[in-house]
Image (cartoon, rainbow, N blue to C red; front, side, top):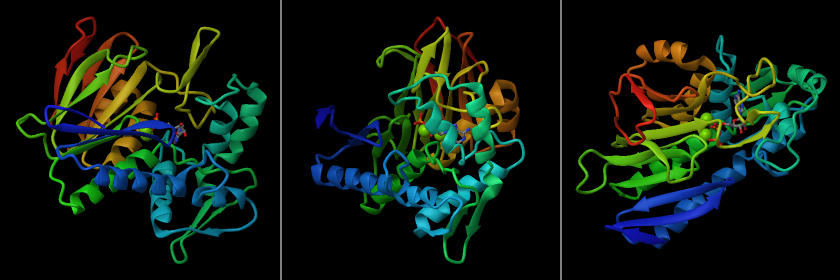
Length: 321
Ligand code: ADP
Ligand code: MG
Ligand code: MG
């Protein structure tokens, strides 16, 4: 724990990510409860360990359905719906591809093209059978694997927010490795929370600018979070489910401002797949969602900023609305 100006910061490393909790009370017991809650949730959803509810579904692929808890069933149902929606680049059955690339883990290398092609038939979200009656999930083919990596942190950030609200906490911020969820605004800061937008591939303290929000979630997904470089290319961890290769477009990062962090996590992946032009057109019809796109040609493009303010810090980048 460390404090500055009445803010109490508590940190941990969970889900392979740095976790930061900001409170305005010195309350280590509450912080411990929050970290415990995150651990408990991680244990349901992780696919980076041998055992979890999601892993029990994966282990039974091609053999039988597995009953899971209501929370896991609900999150899988959301992931399924987003994955089968027309034109979606979100696919929660991307697991075999993610595991093969091992981006962010040891042993990373560009897999042979024929191996990637052979995995694609195992990433068909239509081959996941959900039974709402007994909360069971069946992966129809052996080798299929659910991966909730694109939404678990957002979902868990919302769980933490609900817990803090239930505990009567008026103002707090939780950052789950890039998924920020907030409660209220800090005292004496009427513009709200200031959340840094990182300079892609920069140092941790190098910011393109600062977003200000109140009671909103801010989720960033960028190709500079988990990646490796080889043959002059940046191989990152957001995949095009149609090719099995990392999505390759003009984007370096997408940030989504929304009420629920789950939505932020879903939409960063979806908008990543859409790119700037299609993404902005899509957002025009979404009054509850805002986004900031950061591109390879040094542009910072804000969708109509209804739910946030942006203060630019790095003048080498061009800001557009
Ligand atoms: P993080 O916040 O950890 O950087 P993201 O929210 O950006 O993660 O999601 C990236 C993760 O989502 C990957 O590590 C992988 O587990 C999973 N993933 C990768 N590509 C896709 C995709 N097209 N659809 C759904 N999930 C994906
Ligand atoms: Mg994320
Ligand atoms: Mg995501």
